[in-house]
Image (tube, rainbow, N blue to C red; front, side):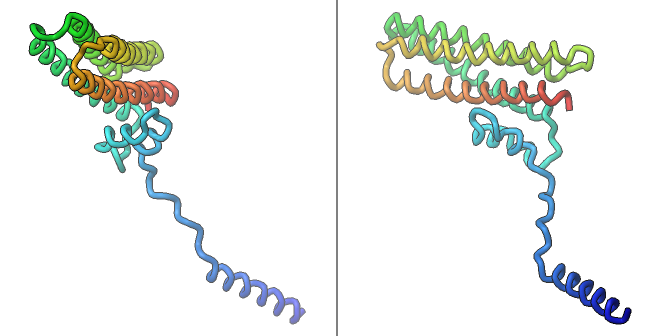
Length: 198
């Protein structure tokens, strides 16, 4: 009986000392960064993280991130629209006809994008439980249309071979930038639709 108690005590002490010597399991990470985890699957994850950096290390929900992504995209699209209108008025007299037509199309398409992104943002800001899926579908459709407009603008302007190289490159850079933001915004809206209103 005494030997059995001694063995039990020895085993208990050995286990205790082993537990003291073993490194403790890593603590659960503090709260996961909602931006990094949400942007991981976006088409342009680094841009997504940079765009939504104001939400880092916060309790931001998918709705906050979707609205934030659309707001940033809308702001940048408005800036692009203004740039294109200014470029159009500046080159109206001197640019070759093909370039003028391409630029005019771009102005119209990007202006449409501003309207569509505004509608998408409005839907996201007024979501209701009873119409959630329908509103999400609207937001996705309008954001997707804005993305298509940007691609059409680029295609038309790239076809205008007579356009000055510097102008063509600058238009391409700005439209591509907005396209990347729009793609990420569409991803965030789709993600919100998949996760629900939270």
